[in-house]
Length: 295
Ligand SMILES: NC(=O)c1ccc[n+]([C@@H]2O[C@H](COP(=O)([O-])OP(=O)(O)OC[C@H]3O[C@@H](n4cnc5c(N)ncnc54)[C@H](OP(=O)(O)O)[C@@H]3O)[C@@H](O)[C@H]2O)c1
Image 1 (cartoon, rainbow, N blue to C red):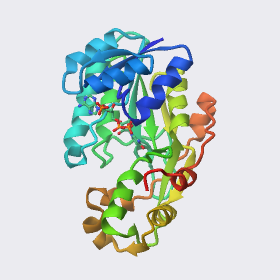
Image 2 (image 1 turned 60 degrees about the vertical axis):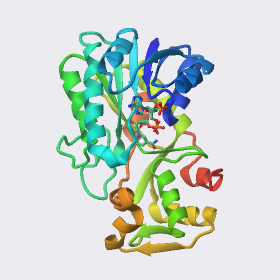
Image 3 (image 1 turned 45 degrees about the vertical axis):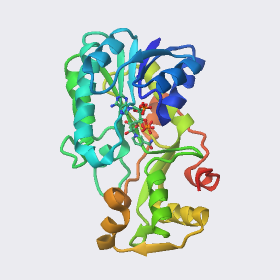
Image 4 (image 1 turned 60 degrees about the horizontal axis):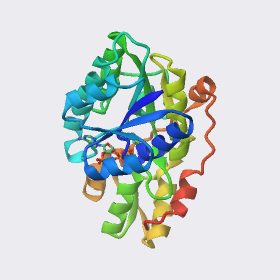
């Protein structure tokens, strides 16, 4: 397939492009800068110039493809709500080029969207469009495209990691470095799910090739690693003390990361593994953090 990949220069996109090419697909990667275009050419992909603000560039990229994987997202968390709305518009634009065909549109969300009850692992089949996280906009947009006859598939990501980057843990390391303490809230037994970036790239490819309209998949290798365990490995890596803080102290300590730091977000991938024959092989989150080159 000729696959239009947005976010092809990002953390996940950079693992996804070789995964697709090695499996025999062609990649048309979205690039918004010369440096991004050069890195795509070096990876063996074709370049499509454009950006998330230029909806016509998204439509024309999708129109030239046999399928789309949308991983671009503006991660300026000071404008998170606006950026989730931007993702909604981007998904609409990509979908408009694919209506009435079986060409798949894979969109990206988070595993938290599948949480039905506190403490229970989030699952693929649950979605509450009233979820308080503004990122629900991505899946709501996906559902609207599905209803318009687009073959939409949702990839829900956990904390995706290698030895360089680890999802929201990377900014948590910056906080610990700046504050001189690696903190967790309360007993720190709230959990974050995780998956290695290469397992995640393989999952996107398998989901693309399966092209099951309306499917949702969880990129989860570990159902839940406690935030306390994560804080402890950060403390060792930075050689700073590890401490519990109260929920009231969280905002001043963690800043924009505070709401995420307190969430208990276990997630399952049992259905994903069954439906796609996807079996993550790791390494695990703590192993990658122990090998981190950025401490
Ligand atoms: N990493 C995780 O643990 C994790 C967890 C849950 C969900 N996700 C989701 O997974 C997706 C990929 O995440 P990631 O970790 O790969 O993110 P990332 O490393 O920050 O990469 C973001 C990508 O989006 C592109 N981008 C950002 N703003 C853009 C704009 N205005 N126009 C065009 N391109 C733009 C970037 O291009 P440049 O290279 O030009 O900057 C880059 O290719 C996102 O939807 C993210 O929210 C990730």
